[in-house]
Amino acid sequence: MSEKKDIFISYSNVDRDGVEQIVNTIKYYGVSCWFQLRDSKQHYIEEINQAINNSRDFVIFLSNASVSSLMVRNEISRAIFQQKKDASYDIVPVVIGDLSEENLEIINLYLGSLNWLYADKYADPESLALAIFEQAGIEPVRTEEHTQSAYSTEKEAEKIRLKEQNKYFNVYAEKYLDEVFLKYDDPAVLDVGCDTGDNILLRLQGRKYRFLVGVDRNPAAVEEAAASAPENAAFLCCDVTSDDFVRTLFGQMQRLRIIGFDVIHISAVLLHLAKVDELLKNLYMLLNPGGTIFIQDEDDGVNLAYPNSTYFDDCFYIWEHSKESGDRSTGRKLPSMLQEAGFRNIALHSSAISSVDFGGKFKEELWDLYFNPELWSADSAAYFDNYEAFDRLGKVQARHAQMKADYMSGKYFIMLGIFFLTATKE
Ligand SMILES: C[S@@+](CC[C@H](N)C(=O)[O-])C[C@H]1O[C@@H](n2cnc3c(N)ncnc32)[C@H](O)[C@@H]1O
Image (tube, rainbow, N blue to C red):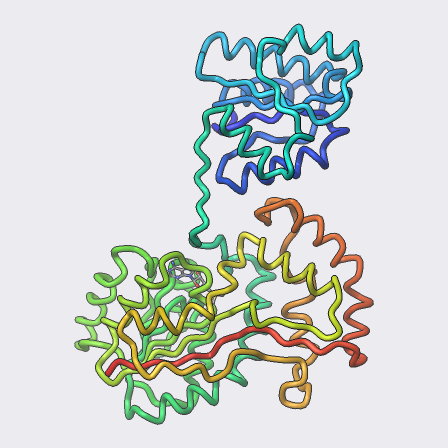
């Protein structure tokens, strides 16, 4: 049985590139599509028939190629049959190419009574997608508000990348954390979004702390953290944006006989979350008076490269439109959100890292962490929220080796927005 989808997409392989761009825009609005490569195998035809029955609506992209395809005509007949059984099943014809007199006559027999949309009348795929939704009676669910990103450390490549990133960022974080830890004799530490605990344990190395509590929503990561945890550390599995977060943490705090934390640490997490403001209010509550919150997060508004190249523009665009990148302008929002949540003494210790920091010691690491497409685990259009980003990925892959060589020879200077902030509870 095929999965239930909002829209079945009928089209010819000849038109695939153009259609895929519109389909990705449709998906960007949270509307699911049955959109598959064409194949004439018998079992596949049965699967198609089931998918048509299991979709809420049917969109047919009309061109000479699609109207001439027997497979597409079979799909249209199926859809018409389905509509006879279920009046709410909409069929939306979208003309995407020229139609010969003969093809026009044929397709009119099937779809002549319906309203046709003409793609060339719409300025961009987004306006066309909205017209399709309107005709099919679909409410798009996407809003401009940032929602939780699809980020996961479950992929092996991302685990390795994150480890490298942490080694590198710790050179910056260490000196800010030195100042924080100077203030406390034996602090209770909370790490929000701790993953396997590797980074917080690295950052706590050589520091005195009474105990550490780490929280992450990924059960496998928490299990791994707990398996090798030091005696004075506990790791909990919990979504920090859920209603359970504070309650779960209070339970742990009671067991540890504490009423709050002295240091709260959050590194590379907030950009992936929805409702950061609510989380900060909860963290304020969990902090002891006199306690400090330390945040490391990203802001692409600070990014620059000199001399500029379309290569960097393409990379920044790809990060912005990857479903796993989160809100890449989080950094700039934090000072006012921290203030609103009740924190004081808000300090931005640094807002960027660059290719010449520490005399260029980490020059190659900076490149590989951010500009090497092989390490992005982005292998299909589904990784992005629009087709353009996938298209640009191909351009970046083709130019990567030469760009890296030019960068290593000193041709480019790069600066990237990474914010290191602290704030306190008075
Ligand atoms: C980029 S990793 C950073 C991990 C670690 N803080 C570090 O610096 O290496 C982001 C982590 O946040 C966790 N995370 C994302 N959303 C979360 C949520 N809603 N609740 C708890 N953890 C979350 C992910 O599971 C992942 O382990």
